[in-house]
Length: 561
View 1 (cartoon, rainbow, N blue to C red):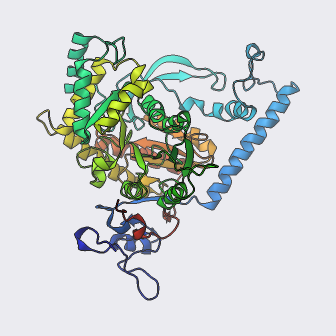
View 2: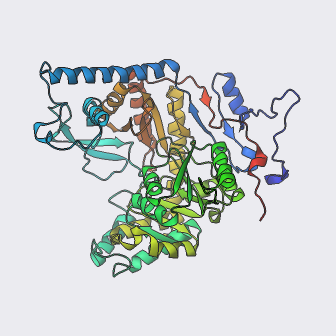
View 3: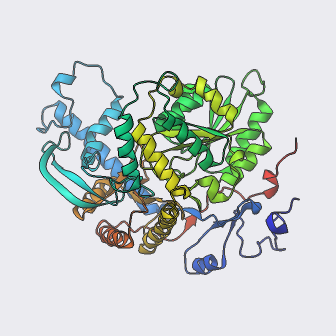
């Protein structure tokens, strides 16, 4: 048995009666003293300390949905569905006079774009709450935004603008984690200078005459920021995943993908032609079982070994607010000689003492991750994405990636925005502004999450994740919550099926370093009021751990070559 950090042994001490010492619980979590006190008061708090792999506490839990709420949620969808079919029947026989939820006459001669149920769901359920999405803003997406007011006179099938502007709406939905999405300051000034010198567009690919010195500077800076040998930048974050995964794996390869991975990862995996197998979200036992089966059984029918085994995970999962268990994933990857592809779209800049993402958050070596992917669309206030890793990997992608060969080069002002904001985070601009933004985001995240939990809301995810899902569950409350918050001058994102499971509708808050304590207190006050109005405070303070069975530390010991 291998000693962990500080000389302590990985094996958990057990008592004769089968209980765990030092406040530990038999599901692989360690309960701290403060957590034990909270549990005595009816609140169970879990801290993961799996086998010394974690250098810091890992607080993450998902509270179980109350049975009554789950039943009422399904009943709500059942009632909506029943009335939808009833109204379709009445319209067919021309008894129902309102025909807004039917297909328009000019469209009836065309082949349906959707399956029957998808069409039914869109007409009868989605249209009821459509006014909560696609709201046009007419300002910088900072801590506050201006929203163009609109009205619908045909049950959300179309909208008309009133000409009024809703000023100073608190922005709780943008991915502006570090507050760099603004029209003043050093980033804006630098981008304006580059705009005058280079213009807006490049009008060519990198391999022809669209490779600027700014692109080269950006890629060297990204490699330094990540601590890897080389990197490559792309003009679109979604395409960074969907176009590069097919260049890395193909037929005869195996992809092991987290069940909650982003659509770009799913699309890239499907386009690759590789075999795809799904493991339970952040569940290392599920992942290890798939790895074992892949090694033992090989490819179907032929039983030949897989050419490559690629694990796809995200740093922060944007709907759950959870953080990948990266130390355990890396240990499994090393044990079974697989490759690891890490999508840091939401975690880069937003996690870690220096803002270098989930690798920095856990204090790990970037070289242990084979493919480091991230986007510039969130923490850097720009657009595009990157891939970092060994020089051989980047050289290969430059000639084999569709996104590199066929896509137009990144716009120079956008590149300069990324360079300036990244230098600010690294402290290369001669100030401590970047470090202060990273620290402010962490403080805002913990404060906002703690206050929401104290109010009695069910909050998903990790305590350090700036993505904060607040569970709504019932379909009627999706639209009601979004509308009530906008009435109070707060813009929020509400999410329902099919983006989430049908019984787990939610509001998703995204914290920013640009949020002051006064702004957060104002938002919390209004959220508390709306929570009482809509009866959203479901929490019973019983958190369900993520692991399904006790953790065995010997499972993840690295094997020697």
